[in-house]
Length: 333
Image 1 (spheres, rainbow, N blue to C red):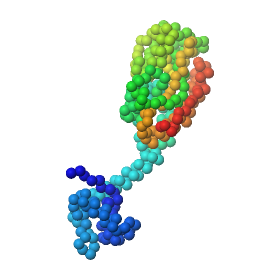
Image 2 (cartoon, rainbow, N blue to C red; image 1 turned 30 degrees about the vertical axis):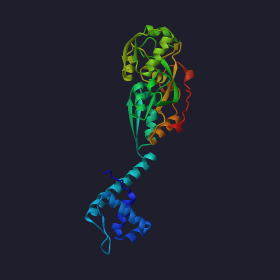
Image 3 (cartoon, helix red, strand yellow; image 1 turned 60 degrees about the vertical axis):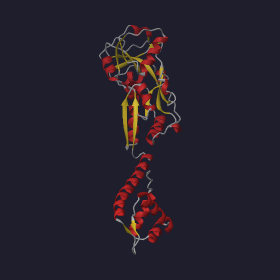
């Protein structure tokens, strides 16, 4: 037999009758008609298949079944009220949960954004995970993460094209990066792209968007890069380059601000690339997710990175340091 839904209204009516021991007084307290109240309780008894009230005396009393049921019903109402308060807290961002996927590169570039968001909404638990761009796109598409921050305009997995969308945050130039003891450190004149065929390179693996950008650059300019180490760890790249022998390609911000790394200008210039917020297309987004999208659209990425580094040399690409930041449509988030 199919069970029937028990509505909180019927339970509240039962509580009022038990308290006042009268249908009349309970109806008056609830500002409803007595027939309406009686009908609701009768439907509740029929759904349960037992009598909850003893109507035979001068006052209405709970039956044994009514006593047992009401004990559980009170707890259920308390939970429902708690649920209502929790929903309200989620909507006003007093509490909530936000799952963010980032590549090793965008993690470095946007950590301050996550810190700003956490400071503004301390009740929101932020779970930040390092992933490749392919993993971010799949995670957003299957709802295992809420948003991702990654490069855009790359050969991304087309299978997710109908399930995800990208919103531009800012543009970031790329630079050749070397350690302080490398012979190219401090070089003011641009080096030619042919240097990539001579110098040993440590790069992210091909599953990462930055590597795909670099590979496309080499293909367009007929370059066969001298790659000696591939890794999925930005930390390993930074430490390896800092030792002085290997070189790499990184966003200019990282090359100019990270201790022990220095940016070297190149011709043809390495491309500028766009950092984007990745979110699901046409699906529900939590209040925390929507708030993060709005904050990301208003976020100020910052000024020329070399001004933040005491031992920095002249910026290799000053024309791009006033980064053009474009916002995305926040009402879609």
